[in-house]
Picture 1 (cartoon, rainbow, N blue to C red):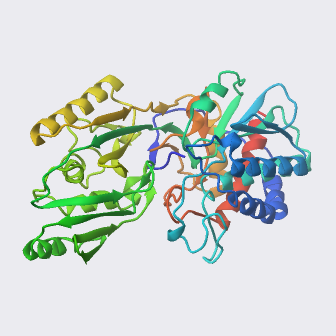
Picture 2 (picture 1 turned 60 degrees about the vertical axis):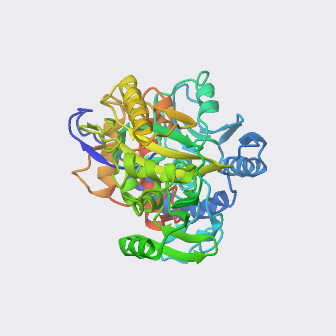
Length: 493
């Protein structure tokens, strides 16, 4: 998932407000009254499988994914749907019509640090009133459970549809789009596609996931002021909640200065050790496409050393890099000329997310989310120029630089976007709701005309990728109403 940084859109004309099917309210009521508890139970079972992809085993061979798919197969049979296991992709369908509506989700989740949860992140925690806390509840297993019971309600009520409903569940969205890209070469494009892996009201634009990852591999005499053991972050698409280092050869005056500087909105801890001063920062994790909703521990740890000259070992170089090219800014304004903004999609965001260590070598992942409005080659050159200039000014040679420039998506003619917006307005009463852009990217990019429809509400903090992911019971109910209506409406378009 992909997420937020919402923007309103008024510049696209998708069509006039349309009359909705007369059955949607009664079927939506039936879905909630009959299956609200069932979808909670199914979500609980889905979350119990820790479907985190691992580098040493593929998802189709991973026992956790095998168990997850067995549960999906059982639920499909129980609910009366057809089921196809295609390796990395599962298809659960209703109807044999020649044309179809594909509802796109994913079953893999991001890692979770169990020490940061009240109980296992793979056991639903109901200790917070009205919330289901667990990894995958919002991203994206809650949406899977909801889609299944929306389909079931329509089937129960015998609502005739012109199009087949096909729920697609991909198993490596968080880590590797390669298998799905290959799968899409032979998958027949649907009449309409909707991802339920983003936000409401209707997402018609997504920024491109991008990466700048320099590797520092330097040594120093370690006779002066230096830092070691720099750590931070958990994975590349999460704003880091924790960061730490050890400071060596600091006198008491400097230590007092650092402690005085640390009196801001993040929590610093200073612990004296035999070999130095251990300094740690506690921020707040968030989805890296929405950096403003988190507190970046790596950025604040580096900020503490702004203006302090450190020896040029790998750890010190990394701290200087963050301070000089990123700082506490969220939009790349210090990173050469890379910053820019799109009128609808908003600004590019730039955030250091995780530090990966291999012996003396440190790689800093900087996750950028790129809107439309700047040519890829221009952006690449600006990144290269900024990195070359930084190395020259600081007399540093980076051991390696990995860059990925993601492709943003902007649809101005999706034929079903207006219908989805009408559904949102109908069930929320928000007549001012409009089309939006998000900071991240979903699998919608792989379809000809896919837009995203939920499950996250506008104006609320997105919790997927955080260490406190949850979905509310109220939101599950609303999603079930709207997804039932979506399938009825698009099933007959």
